[in-house]
Length: 195
Image (cartoon, rainbow, N blue to C red; front, top):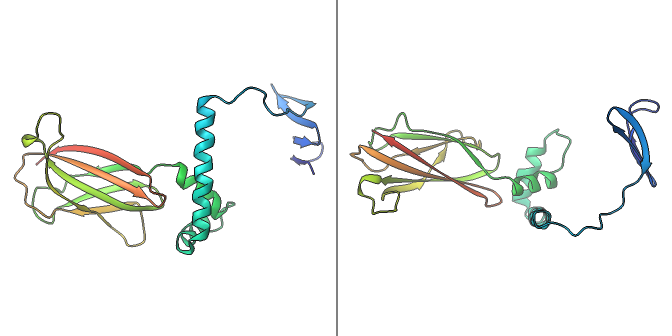
């Protein structure tokens, strides 16, 4: 059965059978329904179809895992979407490291490094502190310490805090921050700073 969005006599657009009602250059037009393309898909179209296939497979995995499914069902709330659509969207999107705040870091044990990640299913933020002054040629630096950041507020995935575990004399440092979400997408950013 065909569907038309809008009111009868109003701005109706849609397809019924083999007829499409559309707006073209401000005018309402009725035309024959477009059939499937006869041109072979381009390389980028093939890659996009592959990504959607993988996203669909991920959503099936989520459906079979009650714990993961509960995460996405909680995110749905009263939004007009489904847990499956959110799972696919999450698979297709990468975490975004919005900000790494090193203002309170002074090279002392326990100093905080605040990390802000835009991804509602961020599950892990890993931090590596490097000394760039002792780096061999072509490297970012020598590893001083590394570890996992913790959520600033339990149950929320935006603000993470890493607390230094080693005293660092400085003066320059490099941070490599990796954020990983529930589907396993990982984003890395590098921040350089001075004490």
